Image 1 (cartoon, rainbow, N blue to C red):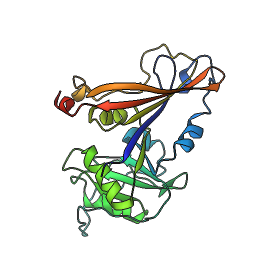
Image 2 (image 1 turned 135 degrees about the horizontal axis):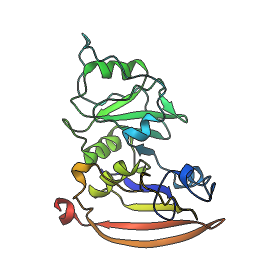
Image 3 (image 1 turned 120 degrees about the vertical axis):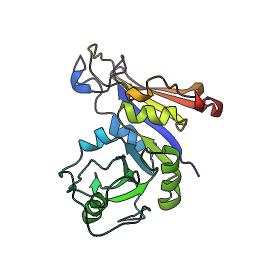
Image 4 (image 1 turned 120 degrees about the horizontal axis):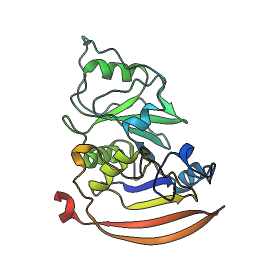
Length: 237
């Protein structure tokens, strides 16, 4: 079963997502966590680049281990109220921690990840699942999270590349955008939705976006809530 997927992001008026670059400074930058808590997901997901910002450890040793691990879900902890899910297809992140803000980490890997990396994750109590041979199948990852730990409501809060991957896969049901009265206005800052170079010509299968609600948060900050209708026929386009 597919969880209900909400993308939550905070941006300037020009769609950029690094508040440190916005002008004027400090324009409504304290709202993200509040809205995150209001939305009440069973899990939230970010990409590798964003995930690396939370890591405290070094990459696990690359040398092979004598122990072999099956390519199947492994959970250090079940029954948590909320999980922090990180997409790390090739196993690049050494965590040095097992949770983010109290939410147990679940890493989404591909089967190409070496056993030495799995040993490192297990040693630190970091849960993991596999979703694909060499590239992550996001739909499969969501189905596994639902089946294994009962995730029914997922918040996508990654960088632009991760968000864009979910969007192009037709998996986002709702988009909540915290819009601050600020502008970045310079090259180089990440956008709410983006892509890797290999996916730059792929378009999201959006059939419709319906503005469900506009909420004034104060200080000129708005929360825009859109419901998304995806076209299954557009997934190939």
